[in-house]
Length: 550
Image (cartoon, rainbow, N blue to C red; front, side):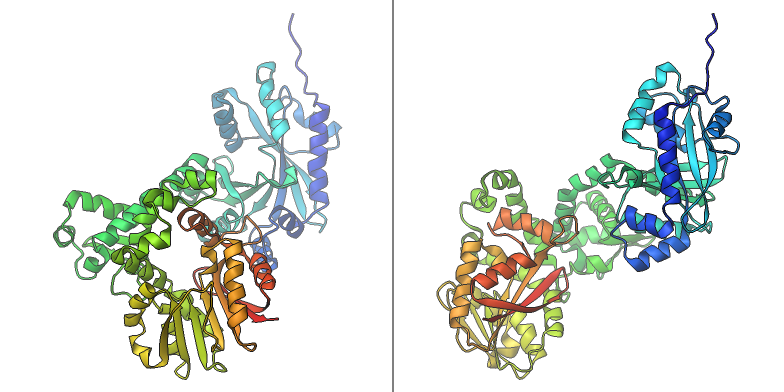
């Protein structure tokens, strides 16, 4: 007996088709972008809409056969054009369910629909012929809706525009595959926000006429979660590669030598191994290669020992003691106690103070944040002050920059004796206007300042110790004086990118302190008797909070 196959659509698929039509009719390009990518600013949204307006919304349905599907859709009030073969979605389903692509019959049908602004759009219907042996695919896809999307079409077949749009969307949504449809001569890129509260808006298609293999290859590569995770897992390798370059003074030698044999001799390194290191550093953007050899990039120039604001000390300390203590991060997370002391047998400050060479390296690494200090002298007006007091100012780099930028200002550097010894060379140019005062900021601070600096001090300590430090400042500062707290601020939104986020884990691991949000610092300052009166962003994701005694 021959089994008759009909094209009747399931009630579930009919409802899903209706929902997609309603989505288009109730929206336009601006409202879809505002809902799907809420972090886009108004200007970015307008630019994106101008280059790539909304054209359709898509849904994947599962009739048992594609024969007669157009007539069946018409019975539900959906008029479609001819069926065209699917390439991209068929490949995705083939990989996802380990079914040979040739065993999947998937067609694309399009039905006109008008958006709320009166623009002609479409419902894009992917239809997969679904005999009983493929019913598991239909059940899973209906549940998760992985192929449903709203689509933006790039008006111009331009690789620069396409790459720019891709970059803009990728900053907010993960790449989610794509392909080239030879039947339509179009490159298709998908993006996904798996956590979007509305399943209908979790996925965006960027459709661009023409073939753009380089953009597509990059997008597909970025779409593989394993590739992204491997990049993250090799972060420790990057740290060590840069630290090795710093140890070999590779940046110094590259200033005068570009050829590999000459670099090998200058650094005392094995030529083949050095070439492999340089190739890795090139992928990290530290050096670049040419037909004549290797040269520093702007990034790599910061590793030169003679560069202003050289970050070579940071490379050495991050690739040295901090690298070792980070290996015990699991202990810090389990216990809430710094792992540095577990690794080295003493707290970070005590251990470094006992080793003059390590202490000097630490102070040099702190001074490597010179860009943050330079920005401070630009955004803060010191003209009304006579004396600035830098509390726990280390080797005096910040105080030196403040005094150089303000010739009428006098300075006081307060810190432990061993720190003051390292500060004398740094402050030599302003020594006639600067006093070095040994002291403990939990007991007292100088009482003759007009401006007090606490630069990256509070993040070293827990809330109790911070309260003691700030209370000491409040008790000793003149009533008119202003306190400047310089720190990296954790973003209030946990999904916001900031250097403060990894530094927070660094503080847990190596010092026992923590980074904080602006509201957390405000609470600490208020509890100690201060009122926050302003703040400004600084370079390197720094921030200055200005406070006065209440």
